[in-house]
Each structure stands twice: as structure tokens, then as C-alpha cells.
Amino acid sequence: MEISREVIQHQEIPKKKYSPLKEFWKSWKKQKTALWASIFILLLIIVAMIGPFIAPYDPYKPDYNATLQGISKHHIAGTDEYGRDIFSRLLIGTRISLSVSFLSVFIGAIAGTILGLLSGYFGGWLDRIIMRSSDVMFAFPDLLLAIAIVAILGPGLNNVIIAVSVFSIPSFARLVRGSTLEAKESLFVEAAKSMGASHKRIMFKHIFPETFGSLIVFVTMRIGTAILAASSLSFLGLGASPETPDWGAMLSIGRDYLGTSSHVVIMPGIAIFLTVLAFNIVGDGLRDVLDPKSKNE
Image (cartoon, rainbow, N blue to C red; front, side, top):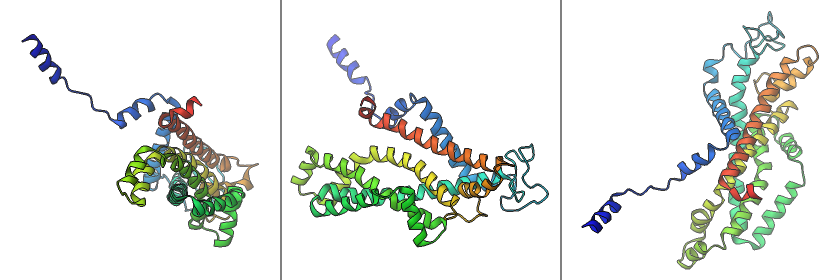
């Protein structure tokens, strides 16, 4: 009877189910700096969505009685040369900057992932064509390549998205290719081949999930690079138009008043700096959580 009771009690003890999300959160909480950076990014995304509704002033309407005013209780970030409230323009600019960077990186990630999978999986002449094309694009600095593309297509935010997407593709392709070369030699891939699985199913069902962790890390860090590139193009007059409350365009206009009204440049500069820093910190934290081997190395 005692044995049977022990067996019954043992059977009644519920087994804890493994939850990848809980394990990730447990590890993520230990990354204090990355956790605060992710909260900052979450707030930025919220601001990007509700910015037009919470902006205290119209970001496009000039007020010539309040030109180049410093920080005050009425304008907590000052005003620009047209008397427009800088804080309101920063709020609207958050949506523009994040939208451009997110779209460009995701487009580049999708195209680069497909090319990387094809290159690493099939190899041969296809691999040589894709990788040599990537090497040619790597020979140009990212910003210089983006300037050349925008110069061909013409200025504008849509063309900035295309330019940043194009110079992001080779990096994603090389990253995914390396993971694909490693994953396609695994036993589960060999088993899928022996069972007659199609190439498409093997690449996207079996190999692609093996690259997902490194992709998430790289996408996060690449968004910071995209924000810098888009802001730089706008600063050079190749991106957003001057009246658009884009962070880079605000820097470009404000440089003429750096000596007399430095807040016109400092405020958008701080916004770019903190945003890029936050994405880089989150990327480092994700790398430590999703790929512990890299931390040990």
C-alpha cells in the first residue's frame, strides 16, 4: 500500500512545462542596461503612434513672434527659426525616423535572408554570384553607397528607404549564408532530405529557424545604423524636405544657428544619439541572451 501511494503521489505531481518565453524573460531581466534600453525603445514606439495627438503645438505652423526662443515652460525644447515648437517636431519626427529605419531594415533583411539561404544551401555558381556581388557592395562605405543610390533615384524619404535597404542586403546575406552552411550539415536536415522534402521546405522549415536568433540580434543593431544613415541623408538634403520634422532635416537647418541658438541642433542630436544607443544596447543584450557562446568568446 505504501508503495502504491508513493506511485500515486508521484503521478499526481504536475510536471513543469518548458516555456521558451519564460526562459527568455528570466535571462532578459538579468540584462539590466538592455532592459532599460528596451523600455526606452518601447516608449519611442508609443510616442511614434500617438505623437500627433499629444504634440502641444502644430509642428508645421510658424510663429514669427517666437523665433529661436530658448527652453522655457511654454516651449520645453525651445523653438526654431520659424518659431515652431521643437518638442512637437521631435514627437512627429519620431514616427518618421522609426518608420524609415524599420521599413528599410526589414526590406533589407527579407531580401538578404532569401539570398543568404539560396547561396548557402545550393552553393556552386549561385553562391559565387551572390557573394561576389556582396563583396562589390561591401567595397563602398554604406553612406557613400546610399548617397549614390539617392542621387540616381532623386531625393525623398521613399528613396532613402530604398537606399538603406540596398546597402543592408549584403550584410544580411552573408550572415544567413554562414548559418545556412552550418545548419545544412545537421542530421535533421539530412533526415529531411532522405524523406524527400523539397528544397523550399528544407530551407524555410528546417534551416531558417536556425538563423532566426542571430537575425533578431542583427536586425536590432541594424536599425540604429539605419537611423544614422537616414538622418545623414536628410542632413545632406537628400532625404526629407526641409519643412518635414525629420531629425536629420532639423539638424541640417539648425546648424546655421549653432553659435547663437544651439538648442536647435542639440535637441534633435540628443534624440538621434539616445535612440541609436538604445538599439545598440538592446542588440548587445539580445546577443548575450540568444547566443551565450558569443559572450564566452
